[in-house]
Image (tube, rainbow, N blue to C red; front, side, top):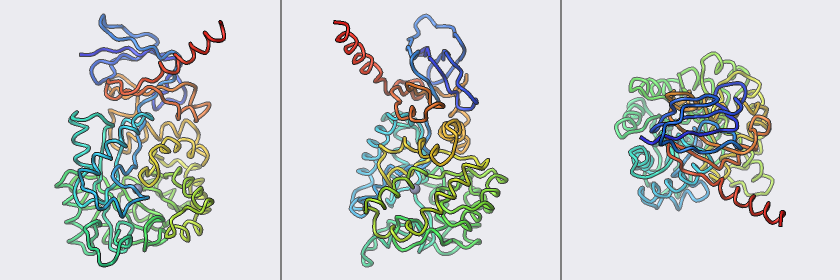
Length: 420
Ligand SMILES: [Zn+2]
């Protein structure tokens, strides 16, 4: 079994209120075996010197779309599932370089199961990539956010949407997700901004439809993630036992209190709002989104302020796929901009996200946990921008990225030049 000792300058363990200072972490196989000011070094252990770095648990992004390219959705529909899975793998690996060792994928527009195949290949060790949990299809009523027909010519009837309008069909959709290997059920109970033909301020499931969806999922042991916008949609999702509200764009103070009481997680995708604001200013927001986002953008920012002032369990999620994965790391900064403390933002991407995923083997650095560990220069609690400088990534005890040497060499060269 491989043994590694990480000698760390500083550590955020995922749940403490402050950094630990100089710490050593011993890793054997895929797990952390001990942590302390100094740990026992097995004779053959590889020592990795991170004494000029702060380490943290591997980051978790609980809302991505590896096989949905929002900017080219119609063309992408013509691609095979295999093509989408392979491109998704490339994105997932690129994203892991930023420190994301676990991702929850919340939906594909493919009629098949590309994200299930991708998850299975990575988790079986056939290909390298971040650990995945997936909700394959986005279940919705017709005229809901998951009804993608509005993007296409009405005569084109490719099976891109997973829609149902009566109890029996809703049950069948949920059960099909379970049969073919989804970990989660993803549904939408309001419209969205980037979709054509729906409105995020309107609720699109009736209570009895939401009830049948969540009770079927829960009978099968599947947690439910609900894309939701309207304040009433947020409340409906909480009342029927959603584990997470995605976006919660227009949540009000009553909804926030309900989420606090019920323990519902909220994934507020704050960087996406920053991306949308930028696109609105530069005139590049897709036309179907403009009227809705122009009407709501101030309300969305007010809802984000409500959330950051609350005790709601806020988990890190970006919606990458709707925008570039290279911007996913900026959710940390967007959270702090919206009023979260840097510590709460760091927990959102580690221990809180692991709580949402019911994965108590992740999100915290402690003996017995999986050895998902990232390192960055600087102190992310003092300056959240440090999170964008991760240059060391370990997943399950295997080092996937270590580009510190390059910087160190450059520093040595610069030093030598100066000296000579
Ligand atoms: Zn999404």
